[in-house]
Image (cartoon, rainbow, N blue to C red; front, side, top):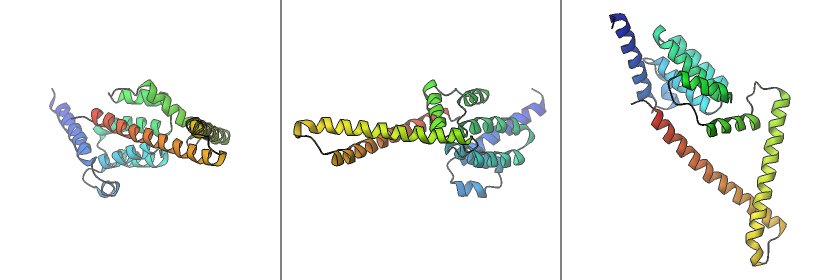
Length: 201
């Protein structure tokens, strides 16, 4: 292997190793990082993308690219493409960008969930009609869930003499909140395990 190519690969490995070491730091610590500024800003960009904050993610990756060595920029550019596709709920682009990074593409279920999120919570750059559609769809889902919760509570309380509409509505709401909370908890744990499994080393 030519010396120059070997040197580039060693520098790239060093950058990736620094990124792994910095992942456990808080956002404030990453903002203050100067030695590995490109890696720190890339992590901040990925975290912003996880929050679906495309504007912040783009700003962090721009700083990362500006601070990166020339041989690191291609990898960071691919990371930025994948993160921004996630933040902007572009499921098709996310799959392609993740594959270019050499990682396993998201499952069809994950992509379907991202498309659903894109429907009910489109990015700020989306048009007014698309955002209005998302609000109406979210309201419809809430009403359906409340009706479902009320129906379950009414069925459970039927052998005990039934339940009033007001009490049933409140209990149905509490049931829906509890179920969504449990699903969110399991979803976060599953996502954390997936990230740990995908992390190099």
